[in-house]
Image (spheres, rainbow, N blue to C red):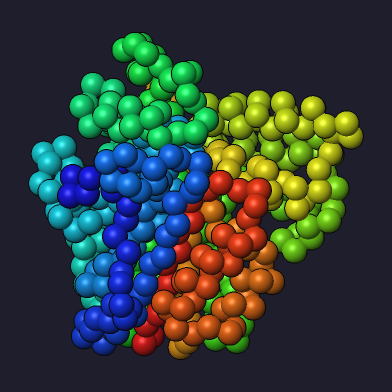
Length: 386
């Protein structure tokens, strides 16, 4: 792989990258912040960061990825998924004898220039394939790989939670990395035959991509595989209704219905439901406000990349959405560590137009407001002359 898993993502320094590709001019910038839940690495003097992000202007292909928190190898899973959306990886994958002619055609679409005319159905199929390629790459990681074991060992040394509870033998190591996985959202900016610009997203988990329109409104392109999304689908809450009280039975019913409707992998569903029930049953009233659910349970995912390595566990089902880009639109891709309330997010989007200042503003505002959270934060801002 081109990136050492123990390293943090490269963060642009100085003015935002500005690159021209025929009709398109992209301006993009990424900011990241490593969680204090990890000790400083004695070799690198840095904290582990399990987020990864990239945007490739020639192809318009980008990704925002979040390694599964609390699991050994989360940063390795994220780095592997990120590598799987590079043109070099995709072209090498295309040469595999097991790749079908149809998959090769979809890879050609993924690696095509952003200004090349495409059809929406083709791009959406290609983005689904991109997510599945990344899933296969992460699922192929096992404890037999030297770099997987090295990453797991480093995780336990750096984590403030495990201490002497870290596994000490081969069986323990193998068990520890079974949950090696990540949430991911991949996006591609492309043109149709008429010259109009579009963004297509394929996601699984709880990383987020939204389009901020010039009129101050926002539109999410990703769909979370989370408890909060289940409650919204059941009509129990609205996005800005943070004071409503949700009872255990309501949450369980909404949760079960949502996962059955979306045909999620059974292991993810069972694990998440067990965790939710255990936490709620400990509360005197067996109820929580929506604000508390956002605060404590946003990290519960129904889908992740990499869990298909387990027996009888299918690959994730991508959520795919396409939006036509308008003049002044900005694409914001971020991990769930950036958890500003919607009204604060919109306020900063309105006040700040520069991509560097906006990315830094969102990161710093989240750090200031998140005494209860210990998650990594990563945000990418992409602007263009569409």
